[in-house]
Image (cartoon, rainbow, N blue to C red; front, side):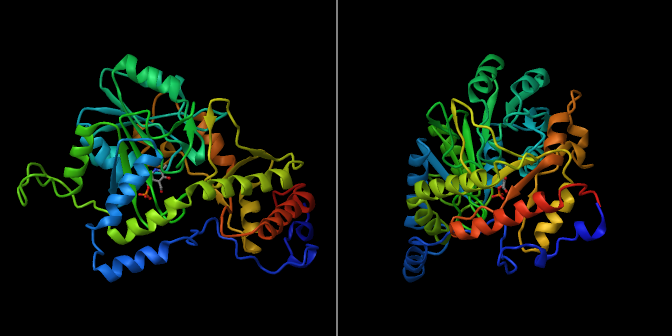
Length: 392
Ligand SMILES: Cc1ncc(COP(=O)(O)O)c(C=O)c1O
């Protein structure tokens, strides 16, 4: 491609376009957030005690069809507490996917266990049950399936393996609030489900997280560990070394307001993905996420794969030049020097390929269809005008 043609010049684009402010994500705080926060401030309950923490735990666990919810500071500590509560530590191996955010593996390292990184599936991008089975040893204690980019792991087979090999299952649901397998919500298949409420997540509390479980004893253990390891019946009496991982009432107040709107947030996110699908379906270099019969995926970000012929970095750069924030997929954990020692001998060719081809598109419920029409027209302009030979 010659230099002029590859130049992504705004004037060349026929839309009446001004530089877009299109971040990848933005929280939608249009509900009762301010009202509930004001209530907290007026009541003085701004720390981790107060009615909103209890309400958020009760309502979110009910939403996920779990008996118990333990609200925590973020999704990473939810994973950390889940591993601790299940007694996982030194000499234990924990199987997890290569394609995930680093928090999944970091939590395993916090408890001194050995992470065993395995590949993901080419169709669902989630942990491969075949790879899990190959990686099981006598030391394996747990699996962490990650419902990646709103997609649902194949929980039938994963739970079958867990039963057969007596393994614990911690579901990492940070990116998949409300997703279902066979009509059952994610987070409820394994022993503990872990959610994140970071500002870019499906619902947010700014920073925040939650463990959900159907086990009363695990719920008790999680809540003791979250609160300095303090006895539930004897104040200032500590039975174990715990943590201060509590969510504040202020954060939970935002969570309560968000949860009131979760159905409409999920619906709007699906509608955004459908706008992209409708607007880009004839672009043969873009592949949308697969849908599977038993799995009800949700739209976190709109995640797509680009054809290997597309120079993804050039595409991202050119979109950035017009104000559109497009993010590449995570790097496979096994490619980073601090984690590479934990890669499995099978390797992760699929995670590597997806990581090189995947991107996330701006997905915000607070923007209207005109906004997405403009983003789509910019993406189309790239593929229609500058794709050919984009390896400048
Ligand atoms: C898959 C996955 N797991 C865990 C986390 C950690 O959540 P948090 O950022 O709330 O600690 C995230 C989010 O960033 C994530 O995407």
